[in-house]
Image (tube, rainbow, N blue to C red; front, side, top):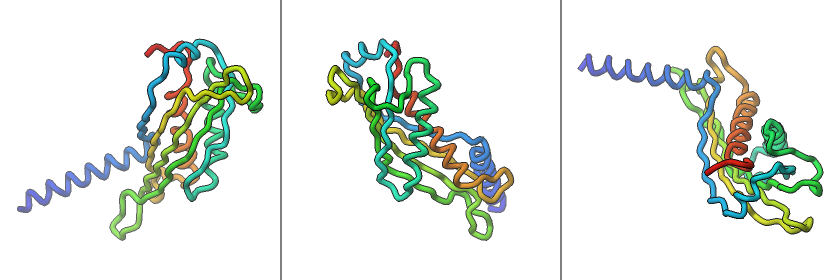
Length: 189
């Protein structure tokens, strides 16, 4: 019985060390759901295009997320050579619309006094990229994706960080996953 208890404590200690390691690695976990691309859109992908990013509709109780996500997406898309980002909606050939569907901060690991040592941040956003055909108001839906992204941060252990810094990492990770899921001229599938 004592041996089983020692093994259980050892297993619990290893699990806590693994969780703490994940919190300090500053990486997150992502999942993406995408609708299939049409053959017409695959042909459309062949050229470099200008993209305009609308502010996302926010369906959460965290109002500061929309502007920060738009900024992160503009930076992430500007790193691509296949897409140019523009602030002029009329000049854009692609327009991105989106919704922040879910945002949560939950305690993760607790210390002996039941105070949280780590927190888990999660966000879910859906996005749609539409392409202009000929007319300014003639928009055709081409891509639609839903991206989930989660990360962990430590509030009470060494290498701690603030919630704001962790949210910045969360939004960076979400923006990178959204860029990876979308418009990529010449991509083979």
